[in-house]
Structure formats: C-alpha cells, structure tokens
Length: 414
Image 1 (cartoon, rainbow, N blue to C red):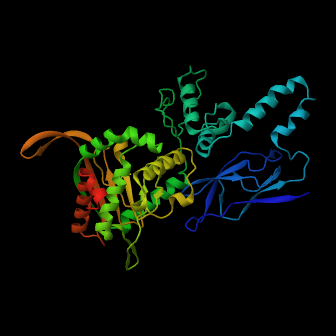
Image 2 (image 1 turned 120 degrees about the vertical axis):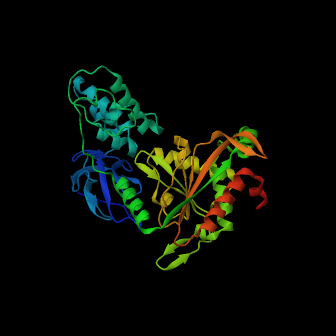
Image 3 (image 1 turned 90 degrees about the vertical axis):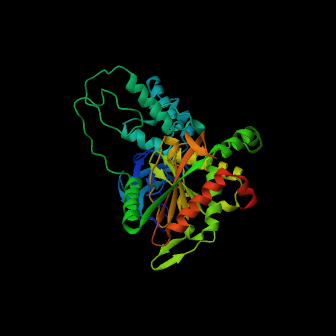
C-alpha cells in the first residue's frame, strides 16, 4: 500500500491561513492524476488542489470550511488500490453490470465531464446543486458561474411545486416574491476574501490621512481617437480598444511628474518606487480584487488592453493567482462601468493614492464663453495627506486630466 499525504500548497508570504471550500471527492472514491480534489480559499484567490497521482481517497482529515495552513495534511491517497484508475478505464467493467446500472454509470461520467470552476463550485454548494445538474459551457464542458446563475434563474422562473421556505442565497439575480415570502433571514459567514477586504478598508481609513481631490475631464478627444481607430486596432491586435488603457497611460504620465503620488509609507520612511505597478480594481464572484499591471510604463496600449481582458476573464472564472494580486504602487477603480457618478475611493494599503473614474455623461459646459455639450467624466483621487500635500495631489490629477483631454501628450511625453 502506497499512501500519499495530500497537503495544503505553499501560500504567499502575506497569506498565513486558508479555508477549505469544498471537497469534490469522498472517502473511497477514485481520483485521476491532476484532477481537482478541493478548492482552497485564501484572502486573495481560490486555489485548485490537483491530485499528485491517480488513486483512492482513504481518509479526509480536514473537512469543508476548515481553516488550514501551508503544508498541513488534509487527506490521504492510496495509489496502489486496483480501483485507482482513470474514470474512463472503468467503462469495460461496467459493461458486465445489470442493465439497471447503466443510468447511474452515465450520470457518473457526466459528473466527471461537468467539472465546476471554483466560483461556480462555491455557488453550487450554496444552492445545494451538483455540477451534473448544470450544463457546462466552459472549456471541456466545465461549469462556470454564469452557467449556475442561468440554472438558478430557470428554477426561479419555474412554477413553485411546494411551499417550502426558500433560503436567501448569494446570487446576482433579483429576489423573487417566493424567495421573500415569510420574511426569511439567513446568517452567512463572510468569505475569507470579504473578511480581508473589510479588514483592509478599516486599516486604510484608520491609518491613512485620506483626502480626495476632484476634477472634470472632457472625454471627447479620447472618444474621437477610439472611434477612429477601434476597428483597425482590434483587427491588428485581436483585442478591443477600451478606455482603461488611456486611463493607465494618463496615470503613469502623472506619476512620473509627481513621484510622491507613487510612493508609500513604511514606518517613518517614505519609499519612492522607481517602477509603475498599477492595480486595476475588478469585480469578481468573490468580491473586489485588484490585479496588478506590472511595469505599466513599459506596456503598449495593446498590451494593457490584452492584460486587462485577461484579468477580467480570470476574475470571472476564479483563476487569478497570488502573483496577479501581489504588490502595486497605485490603483484605478472604475465605478463608471456600474453607473457611478461620483465617489471617494479608499486607498489600497500600502499605496498612498487611488484614482476613481466615473460614468461619462453629456453635460453643458462653458468653452470660450460659449455653452456647449461635452461628454464629461468626474475624476476623484484619494491620497494619503501624511506624505502627499494638496499641491502635488491637485497637480497630479490635473496632469491626468490634461493627458486625457489631449492624448498626443502621451506620445510626446509632455
């Protein structure tokens, strides 16, 4: 008998603990090499733990929702048992079974193909569904979060067969009258990520002297530039030309002029960073995450757009890694995609400033003594007044405004 200990993988230096979300296998079940056995949630990402070899799980030492540390043994895997074969290899043996066993075998094969992505698996567990209950549209038939939401919406729209009291689940679909019947309540523990977000926001507000400065930006020049070149850009680079790449370039141009905005506080020291790692706030099924564009000053517009698109897809699928999220010298939060008109963003420690971008709306403005209609956007930059004076903050935001209103400045380094 060859027993392998299944241990929690190495976590990043800043992550001390993790939570076991959901075992995908039970004791006595076979597992194929590299098949995901369990999802492990840290305060930054959800990790999949693949089997190091084919075998049979003989013992689960730590159950779902257990708090664990790196290197801790959570299960035992026997690689010598004859049942330790790939799922497809068990088909010939099944042929000798009684005809009534065929439906169960088919269901097992279907479950093997419908592997749920981490975010989808969490929602399946919350709504007491199995991956086999949902048609997967992801790669190799994997079930995505969108698949689960679609399934829940279908169930919600179907006639209610019983008067059972429905649970309040964390889904994005609006609550129906059935879900709200009998004034239900449900106590749900914060996810590790949500708890970490709450902790960091409180830390930011209690340890930083946060002020916010505002300015309005005429988006017409960038909109004209984008409209002129977006089709050629997408054909050439295989990615759509959005606005975020212009925001990033404008931010980098301002940080070069006013390095203190790109600095951070370490005790009684100010740390000036000779690089520009820009965090882009992205909504994910687990909450707000901030993946990092490293050396953004050295990236082209196309490279920025490709990386942001990659971050967006990885966030939806729960595939962001610790390396994607570690670090950052400045952040951008675009609440405008959700319709926000004005906000005061909270600094992401240990950074010292963050730019909030909002919805672009046509407004009446005065130009050369004339009232004209322009697509305007309110920029808001929150900054740590301990090291950034009002002068640098205001001038830095003005530099961002000027770069957006005259994109040629970005090419000419003006």
